[in-house]
Length: 527
Image (cartoon, rainbow, N blue to C red):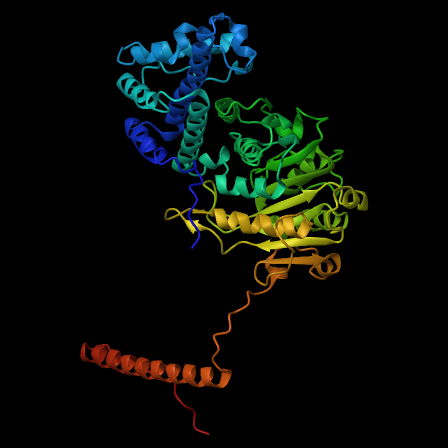
């Protein structure tokens, strides 16, 4: 049986208890407000721990421990004395603790250009309970206590990520706008394997795609510096969460914000990315498409003004470098819709070889919606040159379909997660299909995966729903002869029908005794 993967924060074993304790402290405070209080303090603890570890090293080396450049050279944020965690912890029970935290946040922003406008600075507001703040500081003080810098960074990073996921769940639909479930992100990352080059997300939320990409590189023996992170986010509050999330992980990045969004103010207009991972908002109708009818990004046709799904797909495809790959999460309707020209755009994408793989996901994966979702894997150039260059199998006239709708486990009454085994099975099928080494030969598996030719896809009207192609799963032969099985099953059916008739008769008699005789609804007609 597959092990359930703790997709919100790894297997540290204490994040859940830590979150319960922190959540208890919030009292009647809304999760959407409390989120920034708790995450801001975790961030402050992280940069202070990193600073203090380097500070101790410099003192041991008789170096200039208060020289800001000594820290910036090692990609460590400079933390002035009044902003260090030890100072805040020592004053946690003071009535002025909210003001001290705000001053610490301002001091850090002043001395670290990349954090300007990022940190929360409203801890002194009267509505925020100062006793709760002090208790939260005490709680967070125990994270990675007395650990080395690398361990502290990893633990705090995972706690931050876990808290992000839990707040997203608590906020429901609103929470899903800034957080993509970790199992979905991991599936994309394991399929695309962003080892090197430029990684881009045009609607990056709180930055989960980037964190998982960096983790993938580190876990597979690569160097973190081999990938460059680029992103854009239109929600200012969410952009701040992303900046802190990446900083907690020590990830250098270029994340842009503007309130017009990637369609109308493409901050990275000239970027061509090697890998794009994105979870755009589903089925957005008010994206302003009427003002972009002749845009250069619409290579396969102008997307409908009433739905942004195909605008996202084409914006992402436009930003791919030659031989680049993209993974996009979209609503299931994108695979089969034909209204307002979407079917023609999808046809053009398939015929041009832009679609590499389609994955149907199980339901209940997302905090923000119960709408079933799918993964689009796009390839910029599946030409023969790429095949020869990489020695991959020539799949230029095929699309891989994977039906993962029956995968995953329920983690609560409303939400499902893909397990490690599920993710491995999906990614292995894709890599085998592409001819990459180490995962065995590809073979169609009825009910799970199918490599379909363009001709087969044309017969289905360029509808890309995996269920149309993978067929039904093969049933295991139980060894019982067909005639014997039918005799056994018909005997069982006769017994069940006889018991049903007796129950019907008993019910009729009981109702008749109560004065509610059932009427006869059907009579036989005489010939």
